[in-house]
Length: 279
Length: 336
Image (cartoon, rainbow over all chains, first blue to last red; front, side, top):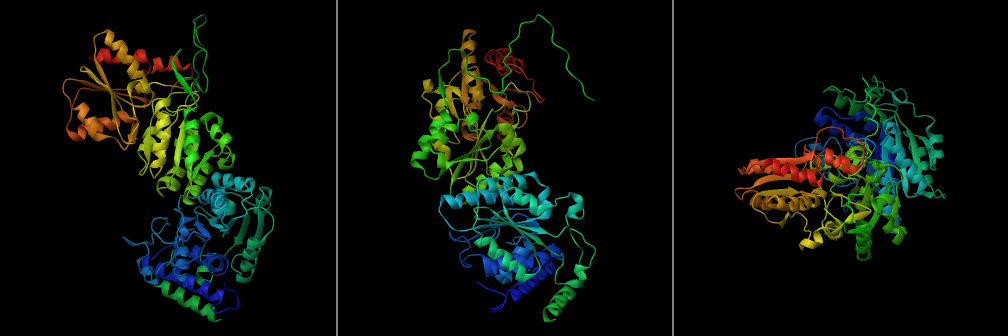
């Protein structure tokens, strides 16, 4: 289990995840890079502090499951899977290409460590409920982590799953909702108001923590609490994040679901990321 | 613009059982209660991986029998079909074999994307078992799944089954459990007719079976239309029409070999009879197979029309839309 002060530090992991994502973005000249940058700190804590898995055996029965409901965040998860040694680093060059195991939208049958086929939004938590029930049937102590986006809160199925996880007291579920306040048609809170999110989730029987999703120390604390919380409730981490985090000129770019990055900017972005790391 | 139907004419006698769940058994017909529920209990005794799931329709899909026997293996998901099938995928991913039940309309129309993405695309071992297939409810389009076969046929990886009677349902439950992969099965529930036991019939996944031979016409049918075809054959006999009946319970994958062998025999009218819209079901599947294979018998289709069907008593509706025994016989005679 890695921490803030161990070597390699979690901050290094987050940096490497961002760097991997930018390198994949450069391969295709596009990608959901702003989202990848915003969620890298959460993925660093999930994969290098919280979760139990064996890089050489992605189907290991006792692993914690990680479901990527928002399949377009695949670029971010690939970056983490590469950093975790589950996907070989050289495959990074194939991102989004023909025959690649790293398609632009995540699918279970393509990629080691990818547990579901996302992309059609609102699927992940329903699958998680079934996995949570299944793990309890097997008397397994493995957990199911599910990452989804604030835009997915518009989907009715998400609330079906949230209600049932509360009903079944699935304390082996840890949901993470990425509140970057951006979806396809604009700011998520304007597209469809979803606040007060914490109170809503609590009313459905969840143990809920809200955190600055780009504060590694705070993220680590809420993951620890989500795992150790004593009540028999499913757990939700509401992570407020900043799109483009770590690359100042992308943080400031006009907010869009799919931000434009010019060909010459990928190297600038990598340089800016590196500069921010040394600062 | 909204148009409302005219009020009925007074004084005209009419059937008044526009029930949600109407019996498809004829009066005095031999039936068996809840064949699916009992067969699943039997299967589950030797298969600890079997779990039952439903979306608030346990009682109406005969799953309550399983629930009573194995309460700790039964998951009530509430009236939430998207959740039902997503969670079924999750349980299957963990090594279990969910039998997930609801009505055919809700699985095919409401939860289609969930089944497509979380079950079919991921090739999860989920058995989808759905009551009220085709026109077996008097409630109108909300409960009439006239297009379920078309929708599930179009889904890669999906095996699609339309059983005829209780005898067949009892046999196919262990058969689909032995098949690794997703299955969509139309369910007849409650008091279900028993028909095929008299024909020495045995269900085999992916196989069409000639139930009886005949020289004038070949009726290719699935589901309850095989029962109707066998009854119609008696009527046709009285008019010296000798009809064969080929039962095709597995709609996908289609048993091309047997269908081509039987349809290729010269001198017979080929009639496909199905409890489903004319679009995309067994009729069009067989027609396309014959065309692709260069087999061109005279061909007719008995199926539900491409329209929103009426509410009403099931016998009235089956007559109206041409799938009652009398209508099957009448149409075939007319075509010969």
